[in-house]
Image 1: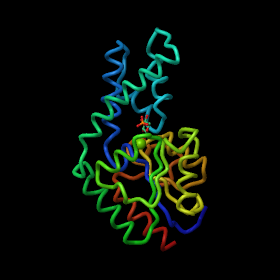
Image 2 (image 1 turned 90 degrees about the horizontal axis):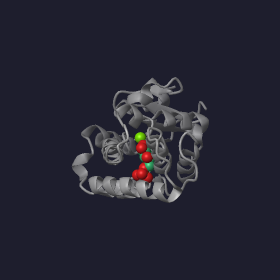
Image 3 (image 1 turned 45 degrees about the vertical axis):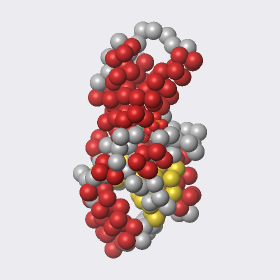
Length: 219
Ligand code: BG6
Ligand code: MG
């Protein structure tokens, strides 16, 4: 690495907005309806992981064996509940801290992208008023491997025409920090991702990125 930072690739759920809470609510409702134990600790294992893989983790606490068709129907049920929640989002769901940070990074000339495993990325960005904001969007619709595979970030960097070594990946999930490390990106981690040993910079809030890029451009 040791290249100049030119781009920032943001995870969506739990980084740009709090849709991680809606994922939790939807999985919790599904698990409750099936009589399967589910809590926030289990939910943390779903961060950054695709919908189908998340369902497999939820079903670890069930004795019942589900067919592929039944699993597809369950994943659809969860997504229907989730979509109902995200459709109620508005630009007010973007925090002042995130809004200000994005505007300031843009003003300073950084290339900005989304790197998310979610197939609902475009809908969420539209709902919160960022439909046309990012220079590139790499999401669950253009990848074949979920985090910790670095594919989603490598595709985002390619769309930005930047090398991995000149980008910071911003994440709330351990799987995302692992993906960033696997792809040779710098990483900044919030929440549980801040405690991951592979994270380059643990941060408390998204605006902490402004200090990081400042110190990088001076070094
Ligand atoms: C990630 C979330 O961003 O997207 C995961 O952290 C989620 O929890 C994954 O499972 C897939 O999201 P979606 O919206 O395609 O079901
Ligand atoms: Mg996330």
